[in-house]
Amino acid sequence: MGVVTTETQPSDIKIAVIGAGTIGEALIAGLINAGVSPRSIRATNRRGERGAELAQRYGIIATTDNNEAVSDADVCFLCVKPNQVVDVISGINKTVAKNDASTVLVSMAAGVTLSAMEDAVCAVGTALARVMPNTPMLVGRGVHVVSYGRYVTDEQQQRVHGLLAATGRVVVVEEKLIDKATALSGSGPAYFFLIAEALIDAGVALGLPGSVATELATATAAGAGEMLLGEAGPVGLRRAVTSPGGATAAAIRELEESGVRGALYRATEACAERARELGA
Image (cartoon, rainbow, N blue to C red):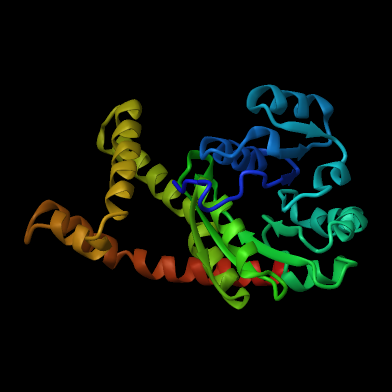
């Protein structure tokens, strides 16, 4: 997990989180755990009781007014649904303009292009960024794929990068690659969850109790994931487990002959294409 230190972030940075739902709350929790002052975070939610809950839990400033949240904000994270991003930007336009183009608007929604965001802002030169997060950010293991707009300064990039790093890794790509990246990281957790689910069912079919199959499959997935973060890489790790002529080798052969690798090629191609369609 990234750490937001005084070396990477000014102590008086002001952060707005518009739409403090699941992703918004995960971001808030990560920022606070990384050392950002709770009183520097203003978060909005349409339900006042939800805001009060977040304020009590994290010590942040909660409001139902998006303009109040974004006033004087250095970074504004838009954590609303994709079809709400443009409307939210239109609603806070005047306040952002009063901030003298110092606010970076960061969309955390899938499919919303920088061009669409740029069309929605009224102040020329507004700094924009597009992020494709994934759900492991809820446990500090997220991957944030980021594309920056043309008006984002190096200092603003470093600021956004540092904040996002509080809940995982940050990978910067050209916007034309973000749909392709979505097919790996954005939707990727679902692939691994499906594999774990299938392993559990397979274990039950072999005669293992469901609770035992679940513990074995999920703990193995978690351990394998940790190992993948090392230097050996997936090929080296797989080879280390696969003894010549052994049980694992027999299983790998069956997986290859069943077309698992080809299925992943087709799945990621379908995902990237659908992401492109949604963006259009």
